[in-house]
Image (cartoon, rainbow, N blue to C red; front, top):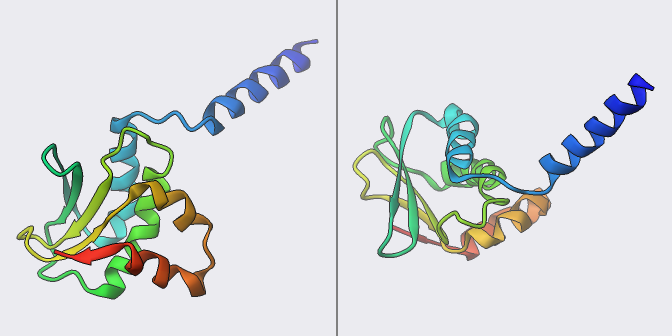
Length: 129
């Protein structure tokens, strides 16, 4: 009997976790964790262009390779958060150079895309800043 109750709670817990409800604070902490290998960064949100920024404090320049490696990890945190801004930028420590992913709604697709098609999907929906 006790085992059945635990199993029911586990099923409910898994359903809640998979339902995709993530608060913005959780998304930002997930971003920090997933992007930690690329250095420390500040997260900023701008209301005027509906854009969020990850500004890497220890990077003088964001290369295409760094962007292509970091964005799929960022998308893992962003994909289930409908309140996250529409655009996401990965910028250098000066906040002046980097890349902007134009539609965070595509993050779910980014996480499902095969590696050989990923660069085209990401760069096709990005622009330089």
